Image (tube, rainbow, N blue to C red; front, top):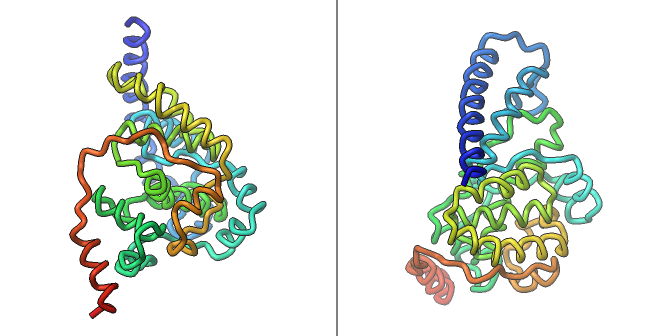
Length: 274
């Protein structure tokens, strides 16, 4: 108990430090003179002082909100460059949003396909492809895109593993992402965020989800190389077989799947869209 209280006290101190850093950073950015030009649309160049403040805030955020993507290492880009599919992603730089993905068309795909599974997951969780934050503070445009790609594909990792959006599932996925992608902030969140769980949920996490995440993540091919937009019509099982991944232990969904929209789409498909 004393160790937990110490960690809680440390977390409170970290929160205060992060909040103070955030205020100082915001004031400094507003009043400073930027000498460099943005490297891409939405890029905000930072100097060494601002980068340090941002790092402190990001570390705290990774602990308190494990849905954040954390930092992306150049190693992810190298993994993509070593893959034919990954190189194509880096060359074409596709984006996943409601502006670039025809969700209505995906809803018409047969059950069992990646596209149909994605639509089902979005509907069941109430999430949209537009919920991921844009990248601003990574100077290298290619690395910035890799980070953006990771953020936009995170929900597809949820989908492919049939994981809901809750704290325990996010943690399980963070363990997988750390093992599979090597994301340092995913590992940081996975290491400390379980302290927020009660003893029962923490035991279930480490007895069921974590062994799956580590074993599956380390043995599977890197999911950052999947060109999802070219695989909408592919069978989910075949994608899993190709990349060497398998389902996690039984997941507890609180919200049942409302199949009304999907049933309507299926009826439209069978009637030829009339």
